[in-house]
Length: 164
Ligand SMILES: [Zn+2]
Image (cartoon, rainbow, N blue to C red; front, top):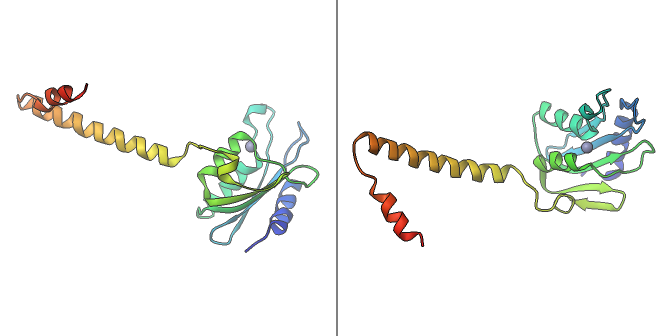
């Protein structure tokens, strides 16, 4: 498997291409994908500073453009070529595309995604919520159909009795 030294080389090469005229804090990111690809990105600042893209944004864009996949190992470097930790927004971004146990190289050493963003909100929560909404919509549709047919919904009374 591609090691962190190789990822650091890619991250440093990406960092050299960064567009950071305002902060001069160039960042490069590189990650190993579960299919063996290496994806990279650099930060792209903007005169409207809030519009600035972190290196991870470009890297994830490359991941998706190249066919998707899950990130297995990740490294990110600052202007001195040494590891930096992803910002809060990028931890969320990485979480969405992380393979289970994604390893991140940080100034403190190698850390796992679940330690970088404990209790994260992710696709699983949205899926659970959409399932709940779909069930509610189906129930409402059923009630509407019965109402349209002039029937009383007996299940409503029964549930209220059970709710104490
Ligand atoms: Zn970021």
